[in-house]
Image (cartoon, rainbow, N blue to C red; front, side, top):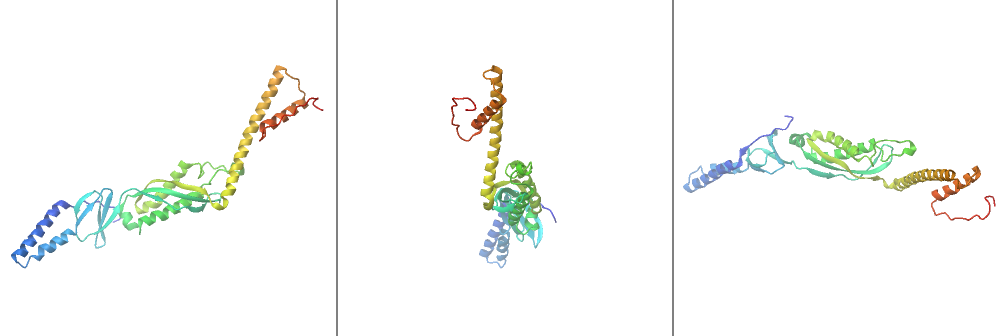
Length: 285
C-alpha cells in the first residue's frame, strides 16, 4: 500500500444504540443472577473503544496490527474496529514563519533571509508513513529551499559592476516567490504536503556588510541624481544660448559663450545657492 485509501466506517449513532442495549442487558443479567452477566458488559466496554469523532478539516488514519487500513476525512461520529490504532492528522492550513538565516546570494554577499509558508496535509498516508515527523520535515526542507533560492539570485542589481540580472531578491518579489513556492512544493511532495503560498518574509544584508552596502546604494543614488541634474543643466544652457542668438539680445563670441556656459553649469549643478558677483568692467577686467 503506497497511497491514501479513504474508508467510510459504521455509523456511530447506530453503534451507540447497540452499546446501550448490551450494557442494559448485562445489568439485567446481573440482577437476575446468571453467570453470563459479565459477557455483555465486557462486550459493551470493548465496543466503546471504537467510537471516534472526526471534526471538520481533520482526519483519522487507522492501522490494524501494523497494517494500514484507511483514512477518514469526512467529519462526523463513527464507530470502527476497537483494535484499530488511530492517528489524528489535521488537514487545516498552517503558517510557518522560518528563522532568519544567514546565507550567501549569487554574488557571494551574506544576507539575512526568512520565509513565510502556508501549507497543509494533502495525502495522509505519505504524511504518516513516508516521513518520520512531517512537521519537522516541513521546517527542515523549507530552510534548505530558502538557502538554495538565495544562491540563485543576487540581492540587488549592480549595473556599475556589470551585473545586469533581471531577477533579484530585493526587487523581483513575484518571480522569486514563484520560484520559492515551486522549490518547496517539490521538496514537500514526498510527505504529502501541499504548499498554498510561499514568500520571503524578511530580507536584508548581514550586519557585517550592511553599512557598506547602504553607503554603496546611497552613492549609486547620488550618481544617478547628478546624471539627471547635469543632463537637465546642459539642456537649459543649450536653450539659453539658442534664445539669445535667436533674439539678438547680445552678440557672444566663443570665449564669452564658454564663460557663460561655465557660469550657468556652476549655478545649475551646484549643491548650494550661487552667490552673484557683479562685474562693472569688461570681461577681462
